[in-house]
Length: 341
Ligand SMILES: [Zn+2]
Image (tube, rainbow, N blue to C red):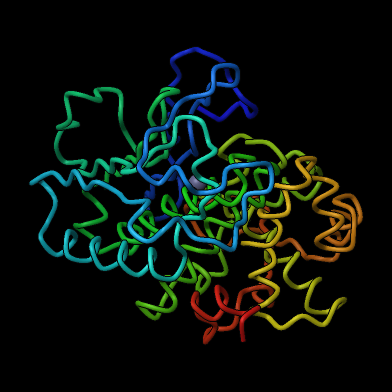
């Protein structure tokens, strides 16, 4: 199911993931489920002294230990994965602590449950029978992370079994930065994808950037504004096209505004999302952050060439933009600390 966007009142809605159809069989996610718009949830926490007025300060992390996760890791998962999961979660909570504004998101509370299992077995958590795929899901009173890792990803050593952890964590980070304002989708999902691939590049020395994010389905070029919402998964396989748009924006920021590569990605991943706290109209926040309107940016996408796919498993025209891929030596931590350096 695709996120409808906006606040949904009162109804029990659990967002489940959509399956990606990419070369590695990766299952991608959808983001957070319902929020109760009318009745403010009393999200219990003993950290309630964190400022929760209209201007919650995104530079202040949740008080140390104040936002945490409960790991529900099924025995079907290989020990190696469990070890790596623990390492990744430790790195992320150090490099990108969940911002304090997450307190203000209805249905979010600490600790957040993470449910993970090997897709070779049925969902082993009877308390949440509808879970599948990878997502941040919620029912209005609680929000949780779902990590069903496809068996193939263990069999064939796909790094997606690790990057999906970063992707879903990043959505929790975004929720804290924005107080749950996911528009536009191409920057929300493209940002999560950039985060996961930069993590892979830094920690494993390889990522989907090495494949130039194949396939970047060319159809999207005719209507980039469609990607402000979720589109048919065939147009945005593994969110590759959304990610292309975010990479093209990073290029504009470097060429037109002289930002360093790391800082350009930081502005996209963090500053823009945080700007929506004070300016909820994302188009205004976009113009203020990037010094151009979304429409002006979309017009720049015409310059990128399309070619016929040269891989058997995908038919059709694709974008061929190796020059947009981040530098091989750019790290996630460079990006996250760019403004500080
Ligand atoms: Zn996502």
